[in-house]
Length: 77
Image (cartoon, rainbow, N blue to C red; front, side):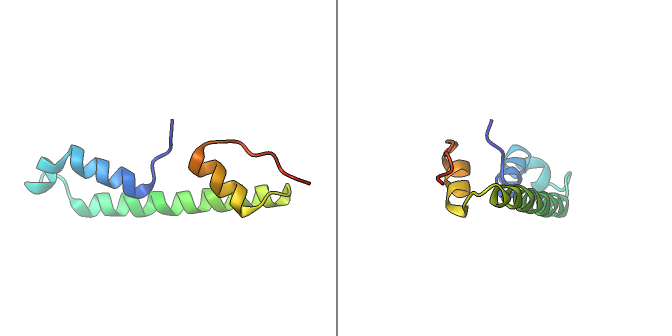
């Protein structure tokens, strides 16, 4: 299953509960704060994984391609 970005999560959350946000039953600020926290966690996770990948001899383009297209790439060299 593909991970959701913080933005995708926020959009889905708002679309799924638009009525509750529109009429004040849920607070939009809570969604924004949750999305910010998710984004922070995703950045930290990426940095950790990227650092490990670089230590193993990978390159940024391979990481980006792999994550974008869900395909594995064998390191050259």
